[in-house]
Length: 582
Image (cartoon, rainbow, N blue to C red; front, side, top):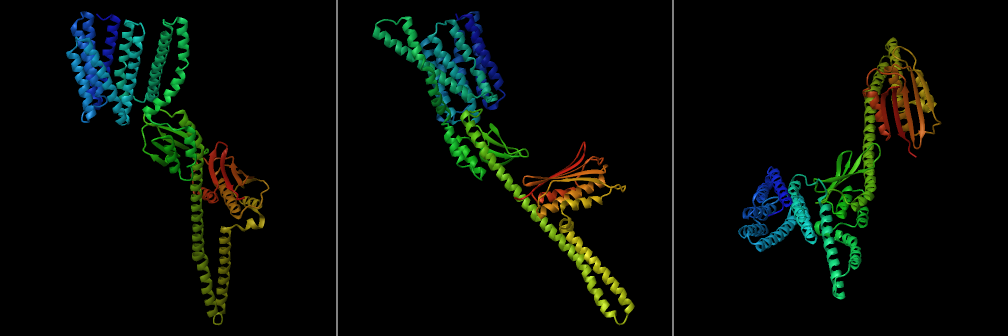
């Protein structure tokens, strides 16, 4: 009769299978495997109860039905029952037939052990074949099943070498109880840990242990044969110490071999980085393709301010994001898809991407600057065309009409000069007035293009002169404190922009602010002129962009500069930076 600790472990095994099978019933594609696993768990639990109450042939039959027929069929049908392919069909027949024979020959220990070997070999071969052919979700699930199976294999291999007795049985049954939960995790939560890393470590450890034990036993047997007697404990200790020195090197070698066998060739980080750097240029798609090919990744994408601007490959479920440094005003990132079986990037992959990321950031910055340049040029061309349209309209509708009137008045004056001297004098006065008005229109057009005061007085003096004329709605004069460094000869376009922006900002202070004090600061920086206009009052309402503020922003943008206008706790503030060409 089986010892009670072993029966308790068998009950845990049956409960694990039944509960996991019941939990998997909600997944349609896994339902056949879930039903078989649930029934296997019930059979094992029934056998444990019958064995504890009386023993005999029936409990043994229940264990064989659950462990040799139903459970192997559940693993064969996991994660989806397929039988149309010859390999699937043969595996089902071999595993199911072996289970049936084990049930039929339940009283024969030799027959049952033989069927155990057949079922085990068939399961390993079929699982390996399914992993090679499966899609990503099924491959994840099968790897979890293979991981639990590897744990069972390790325990089953090690325990016979140890004088554990009943404890060995308990350990073996508890190890088997991890298989059914692994099926559940493989379907419901496959990415909870990196199963690839666990599989590689498990296979490497088992292989290294087998190799270490084989080497130790081979050396010990050789010493015994040559010496004619069993080596003393001291000699065995020396043999064990020498053999132990091979354990870690063997693991290092096996890790690379097993990783390649299970998951394919992994690229050399230095060589991958060299290949990627050689392909990074103006086209980000080519750079992403080079990254994918060098690192054997399924997907790569570049994103700028949350929008994907370039991508290569097919997007996958699991990706990793690497931020790209693009400055305070822009955000960029490199998204890479993980290879099947990976939950994170390897150290080598991360190193390659850390080398590549600054180059990709530089490419994105260059692309962003080129876009800004094109936009700025477009705005400049649009502004020029709008100015030409305004001049044409003003010349045609204003000055043109007035000059036409002068011409008609001159004709009328010529016709009445001899016959109506008094009327001719009235026409002459009208002609002079129209001429004066035309001159004023011309001055207005000239002023609109470039204020004459800039040429006559200079920028700073012209600003001071215009500021003296500013009044609040109640007639109070606006006091302006104008501070300016020694400004070098500024380009004409910059001078006009500064003049217009400062006057528009001061006009807004006079019209809308509760303050009668304003400060203007013009500071020459490296290849840029910084403008700041502040006041210590409030508009009483949040600022809204109007024609004046929009005009200031457009003038700054035409030169490739920036402008911001805001209400602060200390008052209003307009800040602009205009680049100055070298």
